[in-house]
Picture 1 (tube, helix red, strand yellow):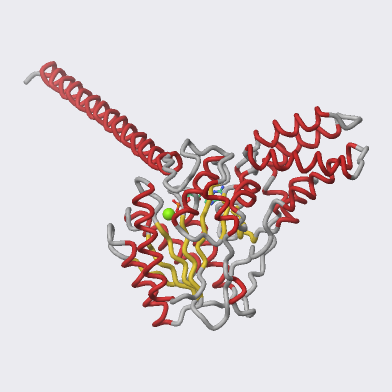
Picture 2 (tube, protein in one colour):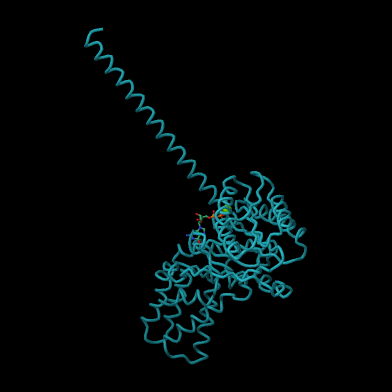
Length: 400
Ligand SMILES: Nc1nc2c(ncn2[C@@H]2O[C@H](COP(=O)(O)OP(=O)(O)O)[C@@H](O)[C@H]2O)c(=O)[nH]1
Ligand SMILES: [Mg+2]
């Protein structure tokens, strides 16, 4: 082959190679697009599942027979009367000593959003008029406090202002502040963790609200207090869920019991409680799956888990905490109502309050379900879970 022949052959080879490279690149792009589409689809399925759970409204034992709105008191009225038998508990509770997280700083979004507007309503008026109540009503609803709780707040405020013959606008603001504090249930808002026994904490809630993260944070807290902590990986729907809890167990330096993927969650709970007996654990925290297709499934699953706990724990008290994502607004309240129907909740944990300008859900779950918020999540790190203190919370959002 002459020099030109060689040159053209080389040129052809290069062209061939470029073509192959181009084809490979195109294939890579298509692959990327497909996996993006699959991912989007998966997220949508997940969202739909969670929506199902909150939107499915079967009011079997509700007299209103229509769609329960905010104003329906069907189940709530019973729930409100429900009295947890805390008195039977011994007094030797273990207190969680908080590492000081600056709540006020973490709630900056809420303060800048809703609560600064609240202050404006009062500072922009020189005398008390209906405008104040109207603007206040709009703002409370916007902030996810919900119609029912908002109406109650406004009515009580108006009554008090009239009764006490208040004439200063600033005084109305102070009354509102005190009143909102009373809406936050402060009885039994500490976790009941006793000495010399195995304390069980069951953690429930829909997917993505922050259950596993919160469990990791709780585990670290009790470990720091010198307790023997055991985690139960009851979310067996995905291998990744077990791995995530395992990661947290490592971080908090505590033990974990896990089943195989798709194992019966109740059997994992059983194994966890057996292990707890064996190692004499002080605190057992059980993770559960939120990816349940509908209320019937959820009910069955939780009933099984609760039965196993009762079998092992007898009639002894155990914590059953619902985790609510603070950024999901009134959806969170609907979830609380749904879960409250199927399991005897002992309190709530509201997460992601660092990421929302509307902290209103804190007021509506506490007021409507008459159960305490025990912890709030203020970030993704291990120390970002703080015991809920109504006074401190009000102070943080009402003051600059
Ligand atoms: N900003 C913020 N993110 C949180 C908080 N709690 C949980 N998360 C995040 O929420 C996402 C879902 O949490 P995960 O624990 O997996 O939820 P699960 O499905 O209920 O177990 C994760 O990315 C967490 O880091 C919180 O208090 N603040
Ligand atoms: Mg999880």
